[in-house]
Length: 85
Image (cartoon, rainbow, N blue to C red):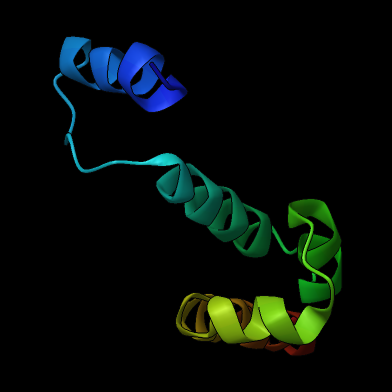
């Protein structure tokens, strides 16, 4: 029996979580958290073991776009605060 059936599925049942969660879900979440915390794509790419940054950018492009919009808005707000002070 593999990890999914031995460990993951019983844990999801016990926690009453969505049974469609898989190991890639955790990988995707890890990438999202890293990007939202300000990590650059190159660092994320190395962390998850992609051969090159273009693979990471291609696979997670939709995720990065939404996160980059939030980061850009945060930077705009910060710059506005600097000009006021």
